[in-house]
Length: 119
Image (spheres, rainbow, N blue to C red):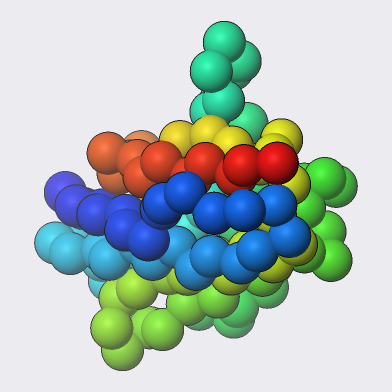
């Protein structure tokens, strides 16, 4: 089992920045990748970014490319999402998720952290 706890979400003005954190504990040695997802009111949850845990390769959805940066600190078992130039449409609950080695799915999810961007 892997436990994930997000933090860092809050109210911010458009154009501002936030850094989200996701602390992982438990069976973290098997982690192959971690990702950030978000769900806005009335919408389905969507992929935001992901990082391969060992090699650090990253991927982003088009709407956040150039504005968001995903990173991780393997020693701290913590993943980050630096969000710059925030827009009102970035408002959502942000979730982190973990994918174990050999699995094609994100099996573990955090409880989410609210990001609200005011115009």
